[in-house]
Image 1 (cartoon, helix red, strand yellow):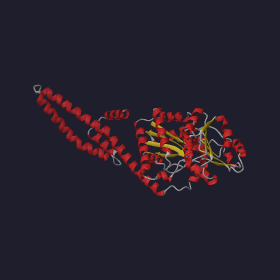
Image 2 (cartoon, rainbow, N blue to C red):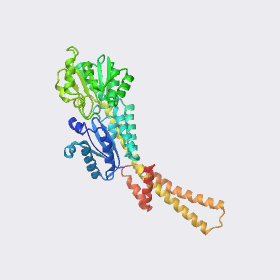
Image 3 (spheres, rainbow, N blue to C red):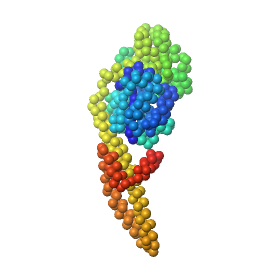
Image 4 (spheres, helix red, strand yellow):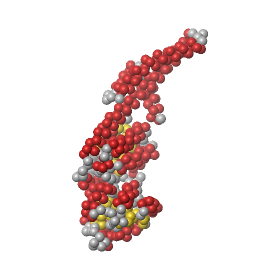
Length: 435
């Protein structure tokens, strides 16, 4: 597999451009299908979160792959290619694997060490599986990335070095308005991020938890789980006026909470209630950025968090330990991939040896038709044993050597030395991919 990653994230692009490029509704599935159908691409997966859009693909040509995936990102995001290109990053083969494993461990997150990325990676894999754009290569890669992420969280204290976006956002709110405990909270949305926000607020001990969502049943279900109450989505305005803390993450394509909504809610609050604290975790944003200028409103959005994250303590010792894990896992994955790449050649070699043995035994039957069954069986076993012993050490050794950098040359040497039919090797490879 020749892995290629083309993407953009909070590290390469301003939040404003990420917002314009954000994929919502059916856009992720459409982009994924278009990528998988591209000429240089054999498999494709899409990691689409609030602060990153990344296409992962198994490609047969690097430059053609980069051009095709970049063009597709521009077409499906609606951002012009020349503007988007300045913010895209590209990783290939081992560096692409290193990037994915780093992402899985939370090293590339806005809040270093956050664990929610593992769920987002799992969602990306499931989408590619459901849409039949991922085969054996990307399945194995993403499964291994998930294992690496779990290893980093279990073997280091990277969890303590970082938080979720929700807790990090609430920390920014607390710096201005104090802790959320004993305050009234409103969560707009009932998806994965909103559910995490609601659970976090409940754990922090808010006095009241209100959930609003376009699908009322989802809001009711989440509220019931956390001991809160649900309100119809068209009553969000009234709920705003009664809330001290608002967290919004709906996945809507446009503004959900306007500056007018928030100004009206702030005006209805008591002068002693403090500012209305609003945390917008949506991409594209749910809250009108004009709310930053409203008196009585304290808005924290992804742009605010990105700035704050640049100055946050990332726990250097834990990060270094995770980086070592990532480096070791990348080396191990590369060695395993290189060793696996030689397997079709070894299988084809043994198949050729078996065919030669069978041919010679048939010839022996023609020359010595009077051989009794016991003698023939003994000769057959002896011949097969000799061939197996001759092939055993070279094939074991070549698999070991293939795991080292440049190991592909050993497979090529086997094919040349034994004059193996390229079609036979390709047939073995195809069978392995299907299985």
